[in-house]
Image (tube, rainbow, N blue to C red; front, side, top):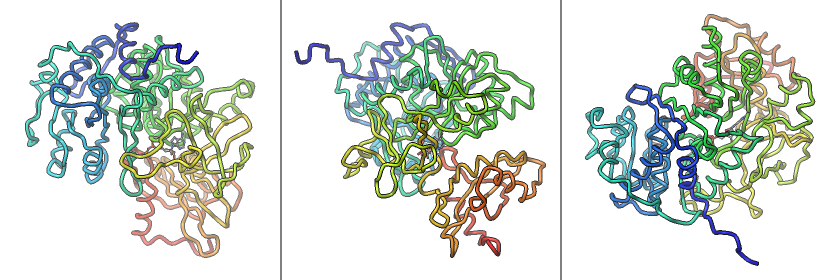
Length: 543
Ligand code: ADP
C-alpha cells in the first residue's frame, strides 16, 4: 500500500499556474517605476513569466544558477518572481539599501549570473560594478523608451528581452527541494548570511501563511504588500496571494504616506509592513482627516508594534491589526496574533494586551523557549527564554556554510528572547544581543521602548544597556522628540515607571535628532552604541 497517491512535487510554478487557471482575470495594479498606474492579471503575469524563463534559458541559465533581482514591488517583479524559478534558477532578492560593501559581498557570495534591476536603481549597481565577479548579463526592468544612460556593459531592456522569445516554453522541471530563492539577513554583525528557500519550503510556507488563523487571504481579497519583496522572502506574500487567487496592489517605489493612501483606496483589503511605516501613514491620515474605505486587515511585523498603532487602526479606522513575528531564516512567518476563543472572551482592552504579543504559530512551525543551558522554560507568560524554532520552512544551514545552524534535534536558535503564555501566545521581549542585563536580571529593551512611546512627545525611542561597575549594565533611553515639543526627561521616565519595577526604569534619557536604522528600517543598536561612544557618553553620577 506504499505510494498510491500521486507524486506531485511542490514547485512554486504550480502556484502561478493555479492563479492563471482559476483566477485568470484577477487584477494586479501597479504604481510603475516609470510613473503611471497600470493594470495586469494573473494570466498575463504567468504568460510573461514564461517568457522570462525562456529568455533566461536562451541566455544559458540552468538549474542551480542564481539570478539577482533588485526591484520595488511591481507586476514586473512578480513576473520575474515566477520566471526565475521557472527557469530552474534561484531568485536572489537584493536590498538596494544595503551598504555597498554588503551588496558586493552578497552578489559575489551567491554567484549571481544575471542581474535584473529597476530603472532608478541602475546607479546603485554602477557604483559597485567593477567589484562584481560573477555577473554576465544585465536586464533593466523597463522598455526601450525608458532605458537610462548607463556605464553598465551591454544592458538589455526587459520588454525587448522577453519579446525576443515566443513564450512557448515549459517550466524547467526539478525536485521540490531545489533552491527557489535566496535572501540575505541584513548582517548587523559580520557579513550578511544567505538563506536559501526551496520550492517545497516556499509552497508549504505560503499554505501555512494563508491559514484562517494567519493572514487568511482569499480570492475575495486584494493584497498590497508594502513590505518589499526583497525583505525576508517578501513575507511570503508573492506566493500566498496568487495561491489564494487574491488580487494585488503593488505600490512601486513611492512609499510616502499620501501615495500609499492613494494605493490603499484601490480596493485593498489586506496590507503588510513594518510598524514605522504605519506610524507615518496614521499620522498623515489623522492630519488630513482621511479614511480607509476597503481595508480590513493590516499585517504588522519586523519589529514590535506599539500599542498606539494597534488601537488607532482598530478603534478609529476599523481595521484589524495582525501582529506577527518572524525572520529571514523562518521564511519568514513564525507566529501571527489572531484570537483563540479564550482571547475572544476577553474584554476589548485585555484583547489589545494580547495583541501586543506576536500570537501563535501555524502548523508547520514549532517553537520552544529555554534558558542559557538549554533547559525548557515554562509557558507562564512571565519567564523569558531563548526562542528556538523548527519546521518545514525553517533554515537548516546558511548558503556555503560548512556546518548546520541547528542543534542535534533540528532546533534553530532565533537569537530572540521571548515569553510564552499558557495559551501559546509568544511575546518577543528582545534580541538576545540587545537584552539589558542588570544585576543578573533581564530587562526587555522592546518593552521599555514601547512604554516610552506612550509619552505624547516621544516620536521614537531606543533602550540600550550601558556598562555599569556594580550592576553590569544599566538601561538608558535614547529619544527622538516629536516636532515642536520639548519633553522633560522626568516625565518620560514617569511614563515608564507606571508599567515597570523601579530597578527596570532607565537611569537617563538622551535626546537625539535621529536614531540610526538598519537597511531593513530597524533601530540599529550597534550604530547607536557607536554614536554614544563617539559622544563620550557617561551615566549620570549616582546611577
Ligand atoms: P533583519 O534582521 O535583516 O532586519 P529579519 O526580518 O530576518 O531581518 O529580522 C528578524 C528579526 O526581527 C527577529 O529575529 C526579531 O528580532 C525581529 N522581529 C520581527 N518581528 C518582530 C515583532 N513583531 N516584534 C519584535 N521583534 C520582531
